Image (cartoon, rainbow, N blue to C red; front, side, top):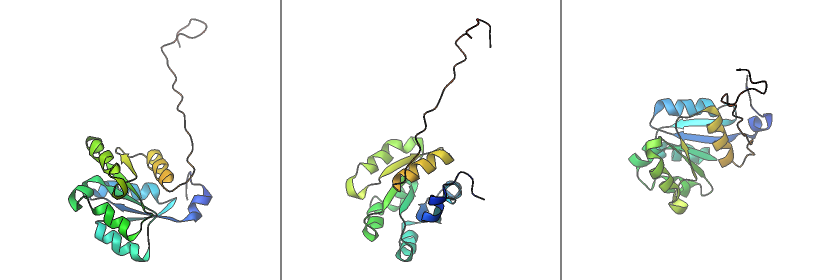
Length: 155
């Protein structure tokens, strides 16, 4: 059973690769995205390139630690195989500045950054945006209890 899934997205079959050395994050991302996307977890850029020959992805969620370990040309190697590929860096808040710098690196850089902690809403919203899907606008309503009630009585 799919909960909170638009039926159009379920049949659209966008392919997402998750390349992240953090097994917990990669499994969580796969779980969060599996209802709307065909999601594959891979250990390295080489594994993604091999799988991508037969099954090219629409989006790669790339762990920032993998980018550091595999070298700054890792995204360029992915894009050489598929020029229109979108890349979303998954990073810890401590690595935010370096991850955003990787986005600013031009054609060889990532398209956007997704910061941990990962929530279903933030992951799906960011992935949908990168896949060109319409994303719902959500404006949070914050209720403050610091204002007295109109009758003057405490709430």
